Amino acid sequence: MEIYSEYIEDDRKATVTRLKRSEWNDNLDVWEVAMYIGGKPIQRTTVRYEDAAEQIAEDFVQRGDSSAPTLLNEHISNG
Image 1: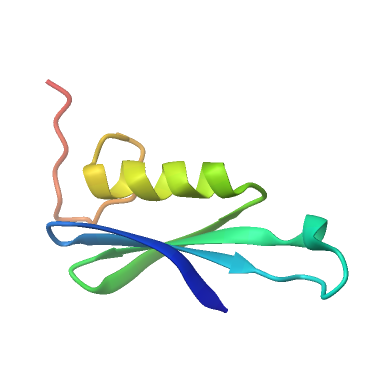
Image 2 (image 1 turned 120 degrees about the horizontal axis):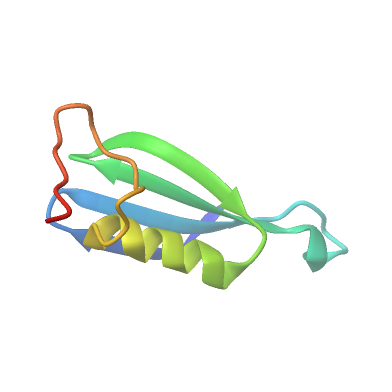
């Protein structure tokens, strides 16, 4: 497993990793997004496509996605 890309902003970090499911068929691979706050892992998500993984990671670190995972003591305001 090798980190494909990494996004960092403030105390948030997201890494995108390609998980090989087969040595012969790349169509079986998935992309994992690992999300961290303050260096602590809070969620791992797998998706089928690289662009979807990159979007999830970018939204998480930029806090642009109100449905992104947060710590219990964090507060997000939409107004």
